[in-house]
Length: 160
Length: 131
View 1 (cartoon, rainbow over the protein chains, first blue to last red):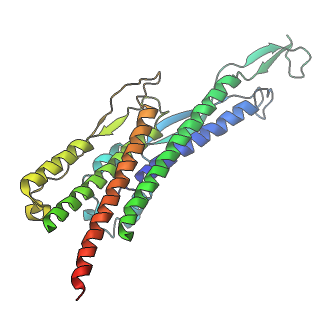
View 2: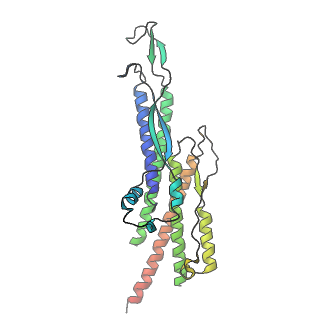
């Protein structure tokens, strides 16, 4: 059954947006970090999105139960959807953009010319991305809410 | 009488199935709002439903027609690409949210109808049992 699939798909997007929010928070917090354990200034994080089939509960169940239930339990015209509908997967990569050099001769991390390497992070860009992330998060929360209401309504047909 | 009930229950059932399929497609589009290169999808559920309804009209009740009913051919197709962002993503957030609300509302209405139909049947059965 693909009744639960919208929830799986939306949940994958919510997880991806939360990861993005974490990366953005990390970038904003480290706007002025000139030192890291690896040395050098903080490297901004970027989040990459890729569409991917969500790991559904049903798929896992089918995999486990496959030997017990025959193929006749797999509904025919639902396969069309399941192969093509994608959730989303996100992961964090370190941006390799050049650090921003500022002239601050008194700074302990200044080089011989008095230049300090700061991570090149635009707080405004991070804030706009944050707004975008929270909007997408909301949209996917709406998907889950709506799907839940639909299923509840279908169940209530039994109750009357 | 039972024919009419049977037919509408069958139609409601198919419609609920198709709406749920559409919900999947909308969910996938909304999940990939930020995925570069993702193309928004749509599903031809209205055509399929119209097809089922017209076949029901032609052949009578589904139980009489039996297996002569053709299986539903659901098709995924690219949605109208009205907004093409810099990242080649064609998902229109507002449009998908609109479709989401509409689809959920119609599903709920139809589930409600189905419940009422079943309640009617139950009522009919119950009253015949009384002396």
